[in-house]
Length: 210
Picture 1 (tube, rainbow, N blue to C red):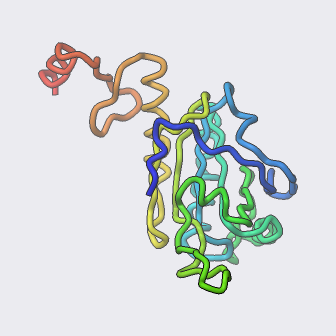
Picture 2: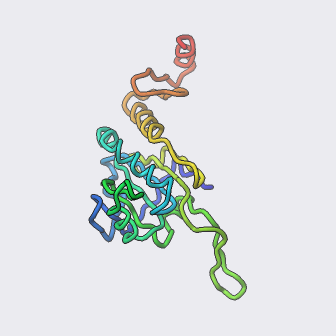
Picture 3: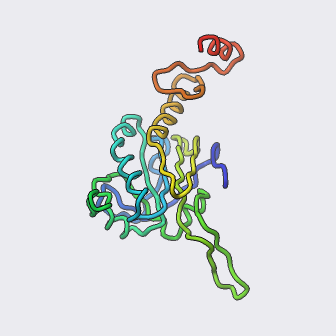
């Protein structure tokens, strides 16, 4: 598994569904450079079980991301038509109707591969035929990308394990606190708590209070 933290996030252009209904041909993260932080999260498949709980959970907190000037973008290896169809299906029937943030179609699996979250393995046999072991779908990867296009946080869960939106927001708050105050964030830090000056004196003072 590649560690992308501290490196430029792989850019891409791909088809996506935006605003819950419109299919666009060349969706890209480049539009956010210099303007917004991005939470880019991958999920395995449309029309499944854990995935809609995550997509609805991010939608339910979307205003909190927007208040922090953070764009939320989802990706799976399904087609844009599959995304669109799932968006037309109500929550009561296992759909994701009401989700408005972009859902990218990584149909050729290159985005998942470049972020190193593609499950399964592929190769060529002696006859030159492409073969695959396991399903080539995305793990539940999540990446926090700053305004300079650098990955500052990544988290990858196995397919059955849903993620915490609370933790995604907490890590955004921590990064933005660092950017604003120049202070680092100790264990279990939450917004509103004091930070830690990255000096021996600062550490001693913090530990003395806690």
